[in-house]
Amino acid sequence: MRRVMAIGAVANSTLLVSSKPNRFSFSLTKTSPFLISLLSPRLRRFLSVSSLTADHHNLSDFGNGDGVGISSQGSKALLKGMTYPDLEKWVYSHGYRPGQAMMLWKRMYGNNIWAQHVDELEGLNKDFKKMLSENAEFKALALKEIHTASDGTRKILFTLDDGLVIETVVIPCDRGRTTVCVSSQVGCAMNCQFCYTGRMGLRRHLTAAEIAEQAVFARRLLTDEVGSITNVVFMGMGEPLHNIDNVITAANIMVDEQGLQFSPRKVTVSTSGLVPQLKRFLHESNCSLAVSLNATTDELRNWIMPINRKYKLDLLLQTLREELRFKNNYKVLFEYVMLEGINDSDGDADRLIELVKGIPCKINLISFNPHSGSFFRPTKEERMIEFRNTLARAGLTVLLRPSRGDDQMAACGQLGKPGTIQAPLLRVPDQFQMAIGTSA
Image (cartoon, rainbow, N blue to C red; front, side):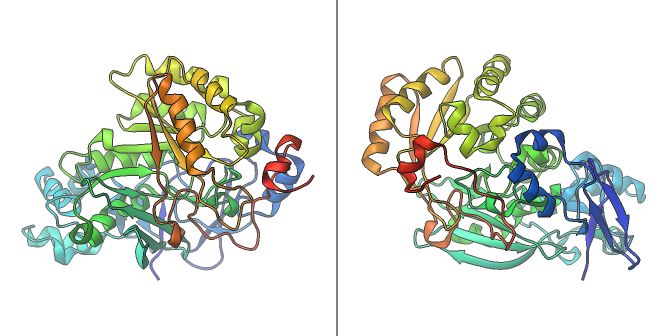
């Protein structure tokens, strides 16, 4: 079975070389400071047995995004993880001119070819194709299954080279705006209490190739069925800005004018609120930003989104105010998952209005999608409409986002498959115990 790794360092870790040929593993010898700061003693105990700190994991790519992916058999470069300048340099290093690199790029990402094998590279120089067959690998993902929901949403399962599985969702729209929702990690370290993916803990980052190829596969597999796929949202499995190097690289590939040609305005990267990475993203990328807010007080957000213990609401929102002053015609999208009796009161609506003042924004109100890993309930539709109307009367742009694909566990917050070891559910603050029907 082909395995792919990347040249690059793993932060706070030790690379271990197995006695078995062509096998690498890693162990985290230190936990990153921002994660330490989030954790209660119970969470620290979880880290000690979770996939984040297990002593041996296959390393497909936990690098910093600067390396070129190669086969662990030591010869083949993984093309899908390269930006065009990287591809041009790689082609030149094998003795071919930049024009050949552009022809290759267009066949991988453009012209409705989306090539995944050298045999699909029509029109390329014979010797160039021979070089590619000997030195290059096109595919980072293997299609496992496609599930179709009653509303037409497709959930695509991909198997990675190390046997892990990720999920990608394609959401058709009658208005001709079909969206692909891509994953950026296997699992997630953020442990948001309403999210099924968070139950998994973090297994590993995805490579730039594994991220970008989700969009390529979506177009290749489903364009004939659902029409042109025009939008990308980084709202699948994982916290995108926790894997910022590979996410920015993948986003750059997606918006390249000679390749997949997604508009930067139609590629949206979501975050739970990693402030330093958020600032870097706004400086380095022209793509859109979404912030998963979901609470109007630190007390509530500390519980349902533990990242708030490191980056408080005031810091997060003030950072957005300052950074967006330098972005023309740019609005951040605030996502607000509505949890019955938790964050849907009149007081929450009033506080939300105050919190976002001075920030160019739109707000998506999202119905919570139930799953076995959570005890929350969705806010009733009538209450969501009242909440929306309160915000709209204050002059905010607000959309109610309906659930899509929930009968196939393809909706927001439902992706992934937790194993026997799961991230812990955090203690419910006293004032919310009645709302979720539990006790301390």
